[in-house]
Length: 171
Image (tube, rainbow, N blue to C red; front, side, top):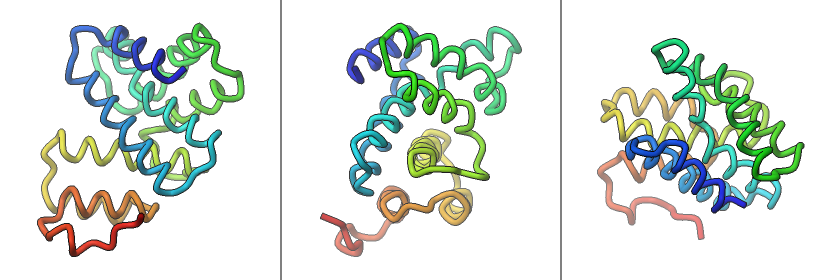
């Protein structure tokens, strides 16, 4: 199901390699953090599904409002995600939670589950690099956003110049 969803999301964003590569990177990191945090199979599936569609609201927001701000993505994303996931036969409970995550992935307060936390962390890891964020912005995000040990570790490994042997890598 996830492979077909990825193919459909690539088609949805056809001609926009930057957006395609963004959601693929978020998906890969969300999946990795989820596995490092040892999430159960259902949570991992929800997380990876949400990671693939998290920015599905960008295109309709741009078309309707000429902007793709985070709040507009959260507004326009859930109906698009629901339609796509329903068409692909995803279970209703998965669709409901994924739509909730899509509708909140730019809201960093009241994070109500490990799937939500990991999605936010994975999106931040990708955005910090894509936006060429300053060391100060990275440090602020690390302090304010990252809660999982795995997300913190990956953030340090990606953005700190210390040698990898300086990190205590989980196995």
